[in-house]
Image (cartoon, rainbow, N blue to C red):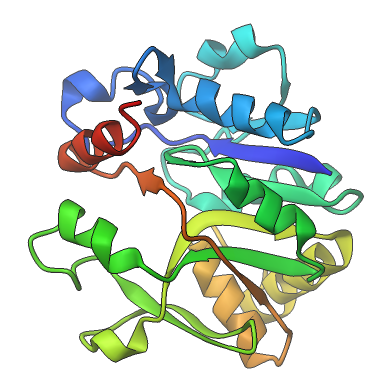
Length: 240
């Protein structure tokens, strides 16, 4: 098992003083998000870790990890960054984590134990976190429907709370056979034009094509950072 952490973004929605470094360099207690993520992987027995860099890539040299670089980080999204790690994804089982989230390491154990070719972590109790992040619980929430551990819908906008049985966390595992399906979808359904696609766009297309995506329930602590308030929330959740 290997790990890939996507750290290309700057965090442009954050105040300037918080986006002088890559977003994963925000501190939680005495460590940065990226340091805590790496520690989680090591403690879970995953020592082969790669970073997909972009903004201020030189900042990550001190970690002495394998890096893939997204030179177009200013104009591209997560899918473009993820594809930079194709040489790993096509050969090894890989857990992919966004670099602006943090979670208890048992989230990794859940993914490691899942047998699906593509396994997606989700939070069924997402409303508790969203109430801390937003004035209205449906703000920035997306559809997520699941049955018998198979995801039926993901990543669409909605104003109906019943469409949301959980929230995608930005944590996913690909086996090589799953990545092969993902790549085929990029080629056949998007003509390899994926500069501004979100990862959930591809996942939903795979679902539409009757390809099984396993939902992996996580009920522990986690948080993500898109705004100054998100950062405050994350620090409170992981203050110990």
